Length: 244
Image (cartoon, rainbow, N blue to C red):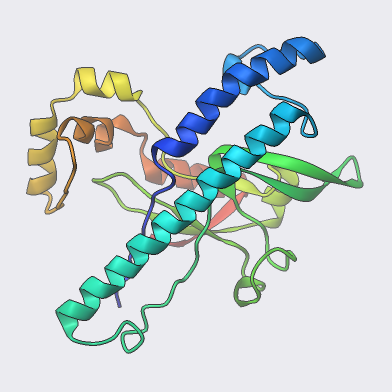
């Protein structure tokens, strides 16, 4: 049995939406006298013009990402069909789950014992709802929401499920990857892409990239140890390991 994990989003579009929103939201915060200690946490009132514009831009990026993954899935099925001379249906190449990361969702959560409708914006995290949550597809109701954790180019990946504790402690959220240990800029300065490619080749890992310089940014050394991160989330009780 083969499992194919596709980990991609809107690429530069989501980043551009966020970059543009930083400027407009800074003006909105000044107007509404909202003070924060980090520019990256810029925000605006949800019902304001700036808030609505951001949500519309974010939705466009999310739609682009969904179509992007759908196209890659279709192409993957075609490659398997061409190689094995069987249809994707005959090989049971069905979609297990598709989930967005780094996105804001309108959800209901208990705040001080009172259910409230909130806009939960997960950055560097992903939704991980517990078993029997009404927003989980019926196939996963009894086990909890599947959580897809892509490792780095040189490590393993994981599938987790959400927990009840995660719902109360982190608004039903857990990590969405290993997390960077080096910034993209630091990676380019410290790592030699030729050496990274050679190490991956020696480990039997095949890679195709538009620019060799991008290899350093996504090198295994640029990220934290994904297993340590997953173990920490499980120890904290906010998600549970299913498959490595």
